[in-house]
Length: 294
DNA sequence: GGAGATGTTTCAAG
DNA sequence: GCTTGAAACATCTC
Image (cartoon, rainbow, N blue to C red; front, side):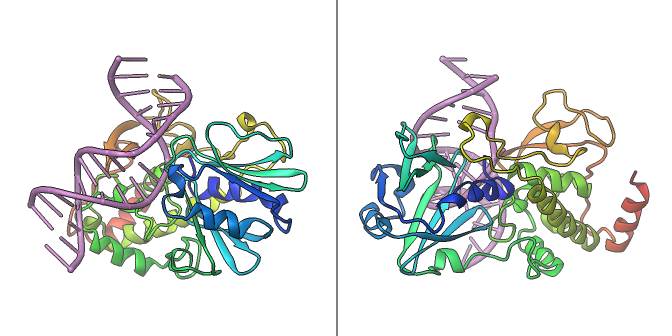
């Protein structure tokens, strides 16, 4: 489930636990989410410590721990964070529980694609060496264009999912970005002209901003099944129709196509999203696309 | 019972 | 050595 906005939602879920002492740590050491961590060290270091602050970078959550340590949580495909009462009893998929006074912070993940990271320093490489956020000034059109050239033969859909350049972008956001940009998901990255590359950069940021703005308010204590983790993206977004079998393009009314591209189910709007040809004139393609819009 | 699910890593082939 | 695509990971839901 979690990509940029959902990760931000779950970050806020644990906010009420910041600054409080961790009285006990409960975990299943053999759970796959600890495959990159020493669970014994994790328990030893976290017990008695406090989570001081949290931050989301791409799909990774980082918690600064008192005493100069860093706890990292990646939610994988099915991970989630919850705030529970003191009487909470872990279920089958609740792999990490931090007991505070009066409440419990819980990380659960049925599919176990998520992971827990831990280091006795505030900025270990897995935290400090992450690429620039798509909404940061360092995420530039030039960096995007250079990356597209390097991944020239890959379909642009697959390229948008590469976290080394587009941190936080997941499957539905990638489809949203391509739909807004008018680019066919199967277009080889190297065939995208300068104008379309710039447009891709702009829409990547627009979709990230819109998704973050629509993060649902965190209601402490809400039952898990009621938690609206992905909020409600703006009206008119592909998001609202991309899972429906008979979904139609919000802009053209044409039935959307769903197929597997870059190893992932992809939803796109025929007619609106066209394959670029190699060697297309950058400025011309940009102008003609802008003129034919709306 | 089968297919697919908002993710990453690994491995083999080009 | 780099790029690319498929498979693997584990479980649940439709």
